[in-house]
Image (cartoon, rainbow, N blue to C red):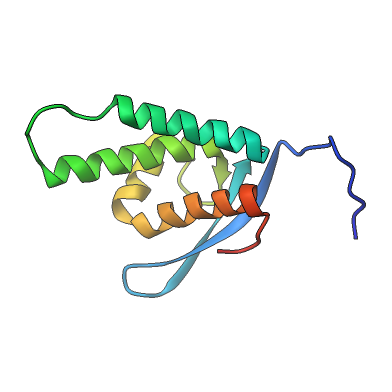
Length: 126
């Protein structure tokens, strides 16, 4: 068992994130997350919330497609700030994260949830 030594924080940590595919099969992606302390994570979430609030559309125009586009874009922004790589054949780019959010939303939610759980609770798994 490793000895705990405070103040020696890692740059990143890896997790295998599991999620359900559209057909119900289980899939996984190994993700390398950027390390943050709980306090730093709180500031990160504050920044994400402030950015989302600032980007709220004004007016009465309602479009479900625009809402889903905005959610996918917001998820991609979050992941680009929380993750520094993955084990997919596709390169880890914002465009590919956006495509993942559009094609497999369960994967993106699992990546976001896994990061939150790891930082705030130190839990393994989903």
